[in-house]
Amino acid sequence: MHPGIQQQLDASGQARALVVLHHKHGPVTGGDRPILGHFSRREGADLAAGAAGGPVYLKRLELVIGYVDPAGAQDLDARDDVREVHPPAQLELVAPTASVPATPAPGLDWGLEAIGIPDLWSQGLTGKGVGVAHLDTGVDATHPALAGRVVAFVEFDNQGNPIPGKQAYDSGTHGTHTAGTIAGNEINGYKIGVAPDADLHCSRVIEYPDPLVQILAGMDWALGQGVRVLSSSLGVKGYNPFLVTVMDRLRAGGILPIVAVGNEGAAPGHPTRSPANYPNSIAVGAVDNDGQVAYFSSYGPANGGPVKPDVVAPGLGITSAVPGGGAEIMDGSSMATPHVAGLAALLFQRKPDATVDEVEAAILSTATACPGDPQKFGHGLVHGPAALAQLLEGPGKAAPT
Image (cartoon, rainbow, N blue to C red; front, side, top):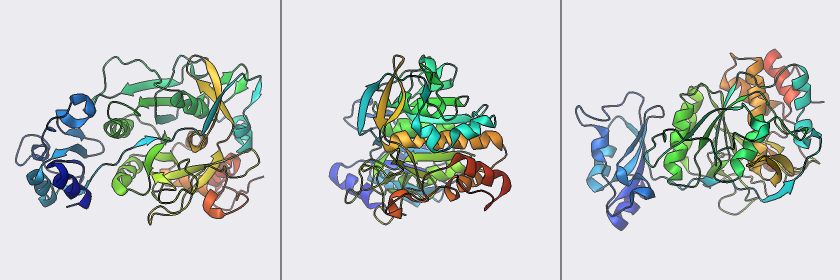
């Protein structure tokens, strides 16, 4: 039994468990020994607090989240169709370190120029036809810069069920800003989006009523949307392996997960975040317009995990959309992450049959080193034209200019 599960049981007689099932698992409901039969309602809990209404089953990811008593925990451990049992950690937004209002004039955001995006636009690459799953605080789909870009929106209740008839909205500003960097068009003639014709599949997953259930439900939903990229600026501080299999299953479904590394700098004990610090995701740090790694951009190994980030992208002084039709300038690895997600969309547009591994390799291996400690920038600053050339022609065929 996982020590974290045992600790919860010792403290209260109940534990919240994230159960990862094998692909060929036994009955979930009904039949002989249904897995959900090992779970119970959380005693004394208000339904708004999360999984008090019973276990949540996410069929595409093959996960169950719920509460168990000691007998239920032992039963789960004894099942040969249960792959892993984890105590869930608290997933949270990688919040910007700074944000100020902006009144953009016609032009081009510096981040687009820095990674060579206009060169890809000149080749007709705008992300058209490529779906990007965007898991964040939501999105203001009425913003002029995002008109027509949000093709799907979902919000989940505390049981992981989509709320019927929910219209797109942003519970903060973060989601609209990151969506704008992925696929926004213009604000007052100022270009903000890397892939301005990509299709955004947005899920409001952060904050309430239960971020863990909503985020995992959003990832499960993404697997049914036909998207090729997942962009998410959230995570758990430090190395926690409970999402490793989730990332594997997203990749097996043809989705490349691109996530923010965090804004804690080199904070002791938790410099990077999960799932950014997994080897099966692309972790993105932030640079300024001089190519220097931003002071807040997290880096290093976390509790024995691999050294992260994998790459860096523009993340300081990034102008993008906010709810209500306006714009703000924000700083953070959250602002860097959608640059890489948008780039991946452009690459998938050019080579629709590319695998997740091929697109990832093209992005990582053509990034250029930044000044300073390599731990801070990984492979380096992403470079769109070089990544495209490698994807089409193979390794060693292109070098950044």
